[in-house]
Amino acid sequence: MKYVNIANTDLQVSNMIMGNMRLTQLTVSEAEKLIRAAMDMGINFFDHADIYGKGKCEELFSEAIQMTPAVREKMVLQSKCGIRSPEGYFDFSREHIVTSVDRILNRLKTDYLDILLLHRPDTLMEPEEVAEAFDELHKSGKVKYFGVSNHNPTQIELLQKYIPHKLVVNQLQFSIAHTPMIDSGITLNMKHDQAINRDSSILEYCRLHDITIQAWSPFQHGFFDGVFLGDSERYPELNKVIDTLAEKYGVTNTGIAVAWITRHPANIQVVLGTTNIERMKDACNGAEITLTREEWYQIYKAAGNIVP
Ligand SMILES: NC(=O)c1ccc[n+]([C@@H]2O[C@H](COP(=O)([O-])OP(=O)(O)OC[C@H]3O[C@@H](n4cnc5c(N)ncnc54)[C@H](OP(=O)(O)O)[C@@H]3O)[C@@H](O)[C@H]2O)c1
Image 1 (cartoon, rainbow, N blue to C red):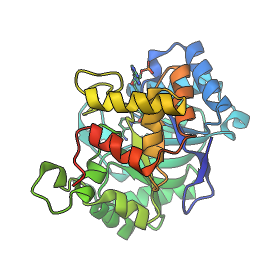
Image 2 (cartoon, rainbow, N blue to C red; image 1 turned 60 degrees about the horizontal axis):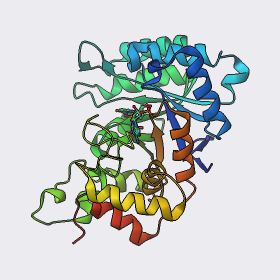
Image 3 (tube, helix red, strand yellow; image 1 turned 90 degrees about the vertical axis):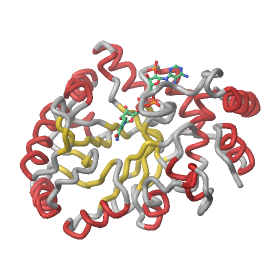
């Protein structure tokens, strides 16, 4: 397992993250096995959000691992707030942020979060209120570090103008089959859909400002439209290339999907959503190999992209 430092923090974290959005698909004892297996593989970073399973995923996590201060110290815990569900809107008000964190801590049975992320941009946010909430949470020791998810550079700058704490993470959707983060840079200024800059060059912005990128849904295409691995009807060429490389490196197709993300020099952490121990192992094995530059581009093109 490779470990990276989250810049501007004292956190040394595994480049594989266990994502807990789907944890409620498991029983308590299955969840315990999965979390313990993740820790045995060297994963020390666990991603949550207050809305996963309407809070049940966080509850199940702490119940399954029988959370105690000793267990807690072995983990880096991250959660998110800012989405009102099931109402279906965003809320970065001071009150909502502070209340959400209290509820998260209660469900996770801990008294602090290592990192709190704002889940999706709230266009009605008052950045001064976010700053107030963060200040309160930091001073009380409830949150050590702050970050965002699904934010573009200008949204980050706007927040950062008011927040004294450095935003250290941006969690973004990224997989071989979902690459807006790099597409426009590769086809810059071309009259081609791939050249549309959908996120104001967030990848380069994060690298310039030492914000750690975390890739969510590493095996999905679209917005939870399904897994591209093994889908030879929709992605015939891609799966052919992936399978050939999997054989070459002695890993599975899951491993190649992870290796493609970790090959990027931005040191992207991969948020694994699997509930399957074997698949988690496959993913970790993939993170150990280094694809060549040519192989990386070959995969990118096989996913239907152009490299002019
Ligand atoms: N910040 C955000 O807005 C945001 C949004 C979504 C998710 N997230 C985070 O990212 C994490 C990962 O998201 P995700 O779960 O969508 O990502 P994912 O790891 O791409 O997808 C996991 C799902 O795909 C299935 N799967 C993976 N490979 C497969 C294969 N080869 N064949 C069949 N099924 C396969 C898994 O089934 P098995 O369980 O059977 O392996 C699981 O249901 C979440 O847990 C959450 O922490 C963040």
